[in-house]
Image (cartoon, rainbow, N blue to C red; front, side):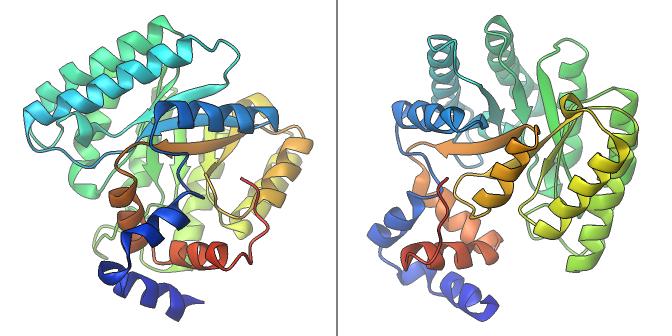
Amino acid sequence: MSWLNKLMVQIMPVIPKSFIRLVSKHYIAGESLEDGIQKVYELNDRGYLATMDVLGESITNKQDTEKPLRLYRELIQEIGKHPGLSTGISVKLTQLGLDIDKEFCWDNFQQIIELSEESDLFVRIDMEDSAVTSDTLDIFERSLGRYANVGIVIQAYLHRSEDDLKRLMGLDANVRLCKGIYREPADIAYQGKEEIRRNFLLLGKMYLDAGIYLAIATHDQFLLDHFRTYIDNKNIASDQYEYQALLGVPIDHILQSFIENGSNVRIYIPFGEDWYAYSSRRLKENPDIAGYVIRDFFKKSDNKL
């Protein structure tokens, strides 16, 4: 399927927007806040936890941060109106001005996390490309010293991630471990499938062995099978970890088996008006996703998420 995935990415500029909208419905809850809330309810009913994400791109103008700030305030307030909802939120700091000024971004992020703390709502800071890794970790560590409801993401394909994770272990930080989706050069990131897998396993096991909460975020069945066995053999309690997946990725049968076995599974739910930019970017950054899109369009997938 790899050649077809790459072809899909190459012809993206000429694919009608209506087609992208059609297939994106499988991976994005919708454009409105109500769409996102409804998807969370649907997943909660099936035993899943959730993380809600307001779609948006990196912002380079201070005034443009007002919109995502408003949307996140509305999201937090709306979640507060639904006390039975099992969800957190995730935030990209470049939406809050990280590429403009770190202090400006910190001031904006504080507004979100303080409002979230009032609602006892967990906030995950998403990790973006390597240009902002250090600044993202700096803001996370700064927030961790003041707030208890915040977590971070570490990308296993970066060479620096082992050192970053060791530092975070000392802070007892809640970490989401993923492979990493951005295209990074070989001098800072592993390139091969197997070496990325090896580092993911190394980092994940290191964190689990330390007894600190870990979110295992991958769609790779090889890794999922390894972690299932490792967790079972080590008798790691279900309140020490969770599995995470993106909305719409066709591994429903695996995720359901985890839930049936007593593990927590969380689904990442993007929503918002910027669905086209998100869909286009995801396809360009990770051509393998195109395979999921193609199978979905031709109804060859039996996924129910």
